[in-house]
Amino acid sequence: MRILYKNADILCREGSGYRVLKNGYLGTDGPVISYLSDVKPERETYYRTVDLTGKLIMPGLFNCHTHAPMVLLRGVGSDLPLQEWLFDKVMPIEDKLFEAEMKTGTELALMEMIAGGTVSFSDMYFFPHVTAEAVAAAGLKANLNRPVQAFDPQEKGSDNRRVREAVDFYNQYHGYADGRVLIDFCVHAEYTCNEAVTSYLADIVRKEQGNLHIHLSETEREHEACKEKYGKTPAQWFADLGAFDVDAFAAHCVTVEPSDIRLLREKNVSVVHNPTSNMKLGSGFAPIQKMIDAGLNVALGTDGAASNNNLNLFEEMHLAAITHNGFEKDPTIMKPETVLDMATVNGAKVQRRTGCGSIKCGNRADFIVLDMHKPHLTPCLDVPALLVYSAQASDVWMTVCDGRELYRNGEYLTIDAERVYHDVREVTKKLY
Ligand code: NI
Image (cartoon, rainbow, N blue to C red; front, side):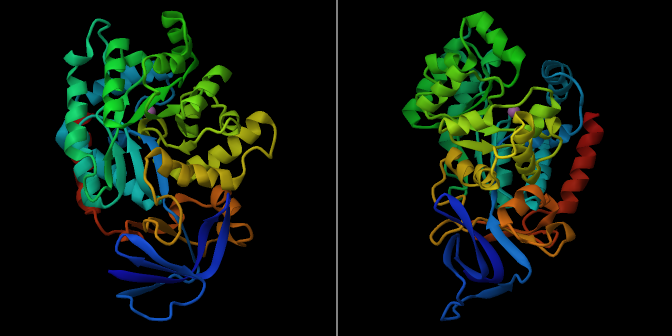
């Protein structure tokens, strides 16, 4: 089906920067962008035309590190240090989550992401097949995995149930829903997995040419405990176990050292920056500018809603843009264009999705439409700056993924929102 979106300003990536196509036309043909110009197409062969006067089309956002169903734990154990928050508050509730709860939590997360302009996310959570089915039905994209942990220091990789489940999940769901669902592999973190299991899984990822999602050096405590236990940093630990001899991406990287940054660059590991979570949990400030200067691919994530407490990438863009300037006392560090790249093309690269992350003919039709008829978006003099410093997730008017409209003017087109709100009320009664 061919649809023409007309009269919108369109944010296109050009060279290493951005350009705005004024009063543009964007045509879709099924899941791809087939026309892009400020000139009206000659032949009107479109099934439908959508007038977007006063609106802006920009690429859809990529949330490259989250734990989607954790929206059910929104606000739980706030204001505690990470270890206490995770082990004493979060995990006892997670023990009560089964498939039905996971479905409800995922659907609520998908609603929040779709309404806030997210078209794709990289998740790390259990019961991932439930997430895969919900994503397939809702119409967005996701890179999912079955996280591997091994607390018993003696456990072998071949004995680890989660490794077997991770491989089964990969075989069953990789490329599911017309390729919208991709399956990665995951070692939860150095402090939750032993060496034998990590190295065993790394071998599997190498054999499958897979993509590995990890948590890395999120806190000082975790980083120093690893050095004490193994005599090396978590990054060096993963590298020595072969976990960086594959495509890999690491969330947080708050306490990485200069030698770690060199190692991540050498091994081509992408980094996912989660500014809200790092500040909320008091973890600190990731040396993002140093990583960008070193040539690392840096994307953005919200982390789970229990440590954020939302899945709002406009907020992450805003914080990524201002925090480092403030911390380094230098207003020139983070450019709006750099931050937009982090939320879009760099995220698509983390997810190994070609033809995604920017608006261009032939690319996937993943885009969002912002209503610019708002006081805080007026006047519109510098679009990248406006999007990063002034725009809100609630300015998203439409979300389109693979050419399918998922959300329009406050209405969910693929999810029964009232049914999800009802289910969330029921689950919440059961959990708390
Ligand atoms: Ni996380």
